[in-house]
Amino acid sequence: MSPQETQAPEGRKQQRTFNITFMIISAFVAIFGSIIGIQLITTLGISPNTSIIGALIAMIVARIPIRWFLQFRNIHNQNLIQTTISAATFGAANSLLIPIGIPYALGMPNLVWPMLIGAGIALAIDVFVLYKLFDSKLFGSNEIWPSGVATAEALKAGDQGGKKAGLLGLGIFGGLIGSHFGISMSAFGVAFIGNIWALTFFGVGLLVRAYSEALAGVDVNAIYMPHGMMIGAGVVALGQFVFILLGSKRKKEKAAQEAALNASAETSPAEPSLNPVEKAVSHVYSRSDRDVKRAFGLGGLMYVGGAALLAVMGGLIAELSFWQLLLFVVFAAFATLVSEIIVGIAAMHSGWFPAFAVTLIMLLLGMMMGFPPVALALLAGYVAATGPAFADMGFDFKTGVVLRKGQNVQQELFGRRQQLKSGIIGFAVAFVVVALAHESLFSQDMLPPVDRVFATTIESGLSGEVGMQLFLWAIPGAIVQLIGGPKRQIGIMLSTGLLILNPLAGWAVIVGIIIRAVVLKVRGPESEKTMYTLAAGFIAGDALYSFFSSVWKAR
Picture 1 (cartoon, rainbow, N blue to C red):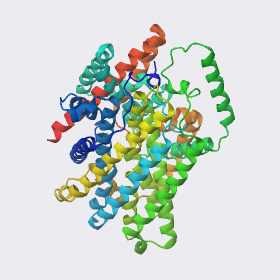
Picture 2: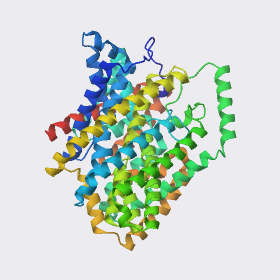
Picture 3: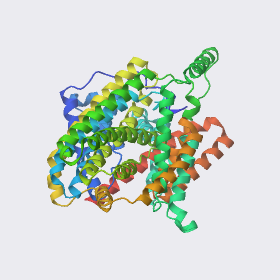
């Protein structure tokens, strides 16, 4: 049975919540998540996935024998708690602290507060757009969203116990052991349940990046191959989305949906496939094409407004001419939308999202347009604020979809709105924590390492040769993305792999795909349920090891 088809536990309906006790506990875990995110992003440069930690906290609280905590025995309320802590962690670290650290690293402390306000606006828009786009043809709830699936399985195993809990526990143990020896068990687990085409190209990209210099004497990163290919693939992906929105395939897809629904009504239901691409035809989306157009239209206008406000607060009116200022506002809004799309695609298919790389790409494009350092610092911060929250909320919504399977569309949308409220609590607390803590952190020279990369890039400038390399490599990136089509997203995934230096993750993906193919060949489709539960355990074990080992190193 696929993650999309897993039934919700009997009698565990969603409740109207957000009473005082619930909100106090939500705020507490949000503060905890914000502190964790800030500490780890400044000391190690990473933001761990705290969704599993939030799920464990909710399970523990549910077992406290006090009447106030009985509400946390409901699995949907546990899901809201993990949504809050996850939002707070990524919101504080990736969407707020990284953006405000860029101008500080450039010696522009006067821009920190304007950047914080601008990043907060971009973060809010980012979440709004994802909420409106989730479960559309662009970002379907029937896609894999690996981290969200792993969190859902952890919550379900804790709620149901039995064989499922045993399999998940075995997977978690394997994930912990593999992670201890440096193996990317999340990549290994994703290979069992994700889109094979997307993940194969992702693994190939990882291996090419890792071994190109040793085997061919060429460092692909030094010649801007990953960046250029991502630009080309991103432009084509944007065009593919526009093509979908125009509805050129609407009649064909509607006919296929009706045929699939009629066939399922006339025959007994067969065991579904785990492949989200195979299930896409019969999936009925809760967001229409009209919803998507509104989301992009309204989101784009809000990004333009946010960029204009940021330009005013950052003093760009005195730095730029009218036409340069207009170009900055329009390009900043465009860059944030593209960042969402690229990061969202990567997260949806692989669980990895190249937010740093996409921001660097947009920064390079801004440098090619001739923006001065002040404008570049604000541009990089504005773009960096988007993407991570988009991907993280996608994971959280996917967790809810798995837990709510079997409920009607109205109940699904209600549950999603509840999760949005929980996410807003996490993001709001993250904003307050960063606003209060950043001065102390920066005075101790505790900056996210990536901010120094952005600052060095801005200070060093960009030559015409680099621009030509980006253009040349954009061509094969665009071709690969075009060949793969909007469902497989192989151009985006290949570029994502090329941007990451992690050879063990590459081998983990390839080996996982081979094992998956062999098991399915030998044991048939019925083995998918076991593989899926184990895979969720591998991902959860990797997240737990990453979290606790990072906390130990950062202490």
